[in-house]
Image 1 (tube, one colour):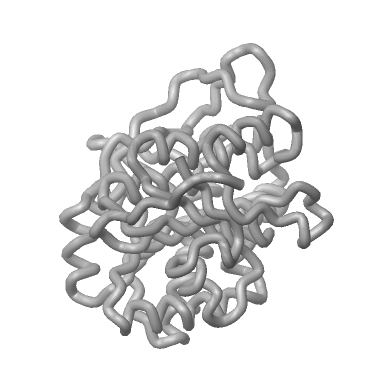
Image 2 (cartoon, rainbow, N blue to C red):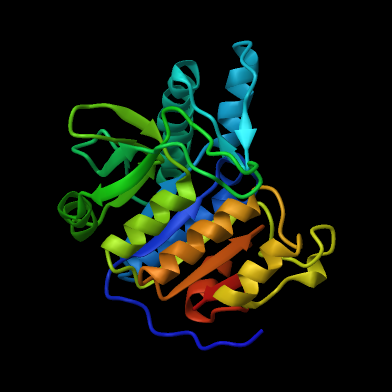
Length: 280
């Protein structure tokens, strides 16, 4: 794939972890890499989702998850589940893994001094959701980030761990796609790198063939891959959110997964050797 990777900003490395990663076998290796990067002087901010944990809790409670175009429709009961699972279970488990590796995590949500300032999303037409606007309920869009709070923690040696729940000035809480949160945090903190960690080893031409990994993907090539059906399911919103972030100034976005010790550092230092790097 063609394209040039430009130098990132001067802010932290922003790392987004999916819920499947937090509960998966690669978390210990990731936590160790994060601790080593932090000890080497690299500022880091983490953002996490919790889709598998939320779905499991919904089913335990007798709820039926509603997913449209890879995005969760969030009524009041679903929002309660997101608070319990994402801001609760997943955030605590992730902080625990980082503590075990020797890092200094601080768990936060959007309601933590408006770490993630959000507004409720109006009905929206989405890829895979049909031609009509979809009302996603208590789903938000990021309109601000408390950069001063995050900088205070990072400068003191801590690793902020942000759950993908935003809040408005009145305390209203919204579920937000974790990739969208990570993208906006990266934009607003002038991130030197944005790494999206998932349960697949990058964007692939054939999801069942790891050797089909695409090392570099330009914005135009990525849009074409979505349109031609090469990219499906949850990777669609991930790429679309990433395209939007690149258009707003993120220099490059790394999609990686199934990592071993040292892979996270390699992904940042040598783009394309691990996972897929998205570029303008």
